[in-house]
Image 1 (cartoon, rainbow, N blue to C red):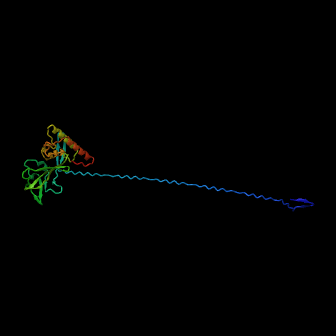
Image 2: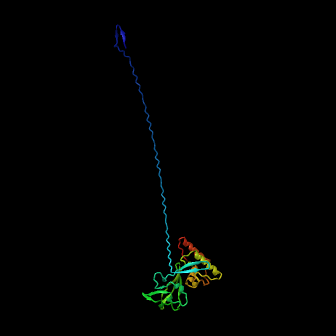
Image 3: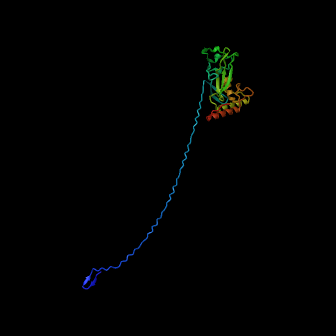
Length: 269
């Protein structure tokens, strides 16, 4: 401040005004807010189910063995069928070899009058020694002793041959499958139809042949009747009072064929 003082200007007077100092105390309150964050962890468990499918494959192997030696033509009043006559030369047991071998026409001539072993025997051997057919016989009766038997599903006719008084062999004369009346090697609906035709003819008193007229009284005709007569297997062409061929036999042949056609292995009782 400048104050005039006489002629001089007093410039250096400093007027000090009292200074009031006000102290303001500010109290700052700090509020600390603690925030707690809760984190919830959710665990998700995924269960995977594995399904294993096992496929079982069953393989059925069917083996059909057909032995063909002689061909015969079978004629009936309703159908004409070409048939095969099965005449394997085997012994009565599969385990041993038959020492006598028959010729291929044995089944055709075995029922003829005056037949001799030389007419049916092709070769014979006993204890390593070859025999002439004339050395053999049919036994004391002089007539062929025939035996008809079923082995599994096969019907077989055997003939007994002797060397002196000793029976040395019973070779197979002829054989067919049971139910295979037309002798083509297979049991099917054709056989059932033939049996029904036989039944129809016999039921009205007429005769019926499964083979041709030339063999109507031969071994193959007997085997055919035995094959058709499913329940009793008559070896005398159903001449017995308790044996006959009827629709029941045909039905059983059809049932056998049906089982066979779907891959099963039916057996005759």
